[in-house]
Amino acid sequence: MTVRPRGSLSLQAAPHRRFNPLLREWVLVSPHRTERPWLGKVEKLAPSSVSQYDPGCYLCPGNERAGGTRNPNYPSTFVFDNDYPALLPHAPGGAVNEGTLIVAEGEAGNCRVGCFSPRHDLTISRMSQSGLRAVVDMWTEQFQELEKIEWVRHIQIFENRGALMGASNPHPHCQIWSNATLPNIPERELNSFEEYRNDKKSCLLCDYLQLEMQHDERIVCQNEAFAVVVPFWALWPFETLVLSKRHFAAMSDLSDAERGLLGDILRRITTRYDNIFETSFPYSMGFHQSPVNGHAHQEWHFHAHYFPPLLRSATVQKFMVGYELLGSPQRDITPEAAAQRLAAASETLS
Ligand SMILES: [Zn+2]
Ligand SMILES: [Zn+2]
Ligand SMILES: [Zn+2]
Picture 1 (cartoon, rainbow, N blue to C red):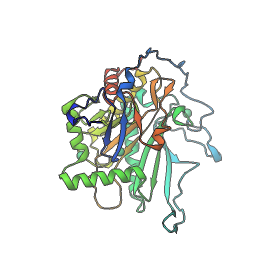
Picture 2 (picture 1 turned 45 degrees about the vertical axis):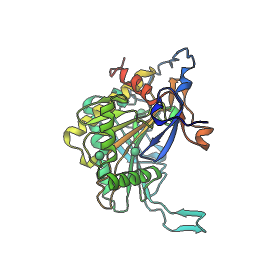
Picture 3 (picture 1 turned 180 degrees about the vertical axis):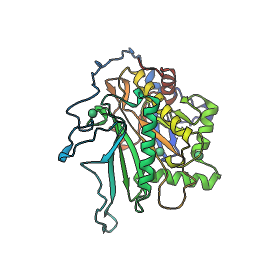
Picture 4 (picture 1 turned 90 degrees about the vertical axis):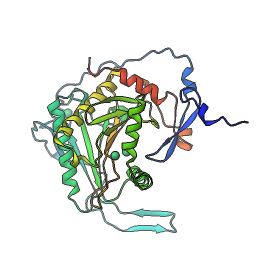
């Protein structure tokens, strides 16, 4: 079999693999499969009637949580320690190591929950500018507070939205986990940022954003401070990456104007998500910020990932199974096609 010359590779027609420079792994793309005739029927979910207040919700103001604690009648954002934390601040240290094969280490951490507002029904896509600003301020304050704990190395702020993502409560909220070691993915990204900076004397994501701006085929939307792209190496059909246009490492570096613009860009991308399949779009999203309490991390570039599970409609989701668990992740619809659909979607909710 002859090998095709590189220049003839059609990214829109031929099976190929794409490299993810952040995680240094490959994703298989099979665009020829989307040529199969598709009836294009979009199944809509019946609109779920979510009320502003739910007496049975443990996140709504004034309600009782597990263990009997009562939430205050909070008027804006509200942060509390998770009643069922995955990590504990005073976890015992120590380690197990049998021949480098059976290895374990004690891990200390904190788990907090942050409600975006008192409203049970107000998703990011429906929040006002001032409401969003309060959420960004809450994230920044949490980051700055947790960073002061000397043993904390990583602060993970994330949101699981929708029952498809296993979110146990529809009340819009995030989780804030901080722990003593770098989790797998941030550690791999840190290595990539460091190596790229050593090799090229520049920043991986600054250079990548510049390329995306030149190509202008995977940019979904942007404002003065942030751009949203479907990354060239996206695994999930409508995965996006939110990139700051300025090089900085963490929320504590956000200017006053950038805090407002971060809220703006998150509202715009989530509204586009809600509009493409006319549903309250489920996703996992989270910020990747530099490690804390070590040396300064000039190589790190602040960003956020959105990983939505939906594929073709409100009811058809992508599963990471089979080849993807055993080999590499694989996708049919190209990142370019996904970016086009997201870029064409409205930023106004119907
Ligand atoms: Zn609620
Ligand atoms: Zn950068
Ligand atoms: Zn990342």
